[in-house]
Image (cartoon, rainbow, N blue to C red):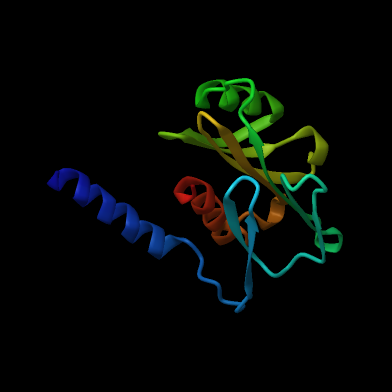
Length: 161
């Protein structure tokens, strides 16, 4: 038990030390999806916001800065497992730079065909009854700039319902 606590505190220390702080005082907003019971926290940098007509998610855009954030939920009608959904999403990426699979979530980062000139971070949670996913695409040169936002979005999925 002590070994795991020690590892946790080392991880926490490294996370605090190496994840950039919100130095530009960006304001954050929260989107709550009533249909699938998830929420995401995101910076107030998006100029276009569209919730889908059927209430399954939201699209946030900033065309000038080439920012695209999608968050959605769906019923798990195909009885996907975490592993099967993760593998399907991995195939969607043309180049994977970072990936991990956890207890009931996955994280993938790299390039996708739709936005090949952009870097894409995706995290998803698969349960018996629903699937929750976010996908954030941004200029590759801004990976470090958006590291904090990606960490927050990942936390929304990993720690969410």
